[in-house]
Amino acid sequence: MNQTLILTSRQLIQVLLKRRENRLIGGTNQLLFFQCEEKKEKIRRVEVDEDAYHADTMISAKEDVHKMSKFSVLNVVKKGQLFENKTLLKATFEICAMKHNFHYEVIKTDRQLWYVRCEDNECNWCVRAECLQDSEYFIIKKYVGEHTCAPSNKTKPGRTASATASAKTIGSLIMHRYERVKKAPKFNDIIQIMLMDLGCIPERSYGKIPKYLHMLREANPGTHSSYEIDSKGRFRYLFIAFGQSLRGFNRVIRRVIVVDGTFLKNKYKGVLLVATAVDGNSNLYPLPIGVVDSENENSCEWFMRQLNIVIADDHHLAFILDRHGTIAKALETVYPTAKHGICIHHLLNNVVTYYHGKGLVGLVAKASKVYRIAEFEKIFANVCNISPAIGKYLRDAEVQKWARCQFSGYRYDIRTTNPAESINSALRSPREYPIIPLLDSIREMLTRWFYNHVEKNIERRTEKDKRFAVYPVSDGRLLVRGDKIDSLVDLDRRTCSCGKYNLMKIPCRHAIKAGFHVGRQPHTLTDLFYTTESWREAYHESINPIAVPEDAWSMPENVVVVNVLPPESRKSVGRNRKRRYETVEDKIRS
Image (cartoon, rainbow, N blue to C red; front, top):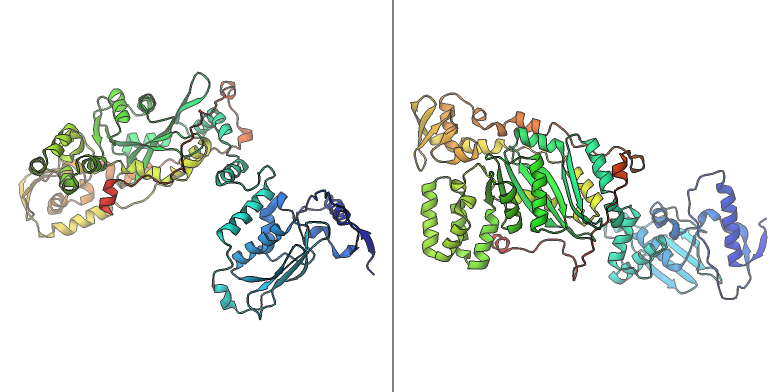
């Protein structure tokens, strides 16, 4: 027979907790418990059946709301279970209903009772919870956890709360999980709390920079990294170039580098500078990255000088930039011998924005991508005749920097800064992280750029050359007729009078036809950068993570003693944008 005791609600909970603690000494901690709060009001005595309550059924959201929600999802909620308050009780079953796609209706609710049942009147699922006297705790008096309604009812979306109710529920759960959270936490408060819970505290992240860079160099031989602080010890610049990427670029990657910057969206802002190449299969090949306080002359020149340490100035090297003056000025200072080009998309955007040349955008774009100088001059003359102002602007922008056929070096098919902007887009979420998680996300991303589609270009051009006729001129030189113009192909020098083979270094349709005529396959006519062997060599080495836990890092004393402080926080007005503004050219294309 059950033993009946006369206990207050507070005494009952203390007894249950003590019983549970005694049993946990030799067992495992699988369930959660509440820490009861002192009540100021007068405690009245109630008659309680001690065996009707179990310490195992006590749920505490303050210790682990995530595990609490799993109880409802896994159908472990049972009769006799305690909840700290009614809000937590309702939140538990709201999550359960949304997880399992069912609806329930509230039959009765007040300060002492909460009774709900399945929306289907034929279903037996129901919950009845009552409030313990002189307490905010709710206990489940009745619970039928099995649904007997038709399975078709579960194909519909489950119960959802209104925006206000959802916000209150989430806010309550967070307040119970994190004791330091104030009432009604704001969106930014929640983000900062979650980041801190994951160890992503921005202030501490900057202090780890010297140690992180040291361990990164240890894990990836040949990696060059550097950082700079001001006189007060505050962070200014950072640079990382992985040795694996540098070795692949110097051996088998086309020597065209695209540089672009994008804003960081974390607490301390700043700018992420990205240098990117493109491999023989038109895949992005990330090179060094940098983090600077802002995109100004000093920061851009510092980044370029660090880049010059790992990639020397050379007349075979080419850079493609946007129209940002600070990067271009730094490039001219540090890389005077390399060839400099500008992004055609930014050029066209300026034509539309400042000269209202929407109708001429197509003509300017066509002039920028033709392969023969004679054809370019004809199109460009038409542009100047229609709008002398736009013609003057294009000449002032230096034609040899934006017209493919006028470029003094080799830029191949790389006409825009899209490669760097694509990496910036891929890092849209990590750009909100503190600096160390940001760098780790970039490191993880660098191993995922593998994709092969070079065969499509050759197959498409092979289909177009079927109607051509070939006439040998001399050894290795053939005349191809049947296209708009007759083309003279030199297979040994890898040139064609159409201009495409000269600039792209992939055989044009005339060169493919000429190669077939003398028994040579198209793959043998491509440049070294486009071969399978080069592609494999570029990705032969993998970029390694830091395989040692942070608490086991070993480093010299001169690295340990350095303390990097975060930069001064720059709070912008209004809500932070997640995506860039849509340009005029974007609107035209859409």
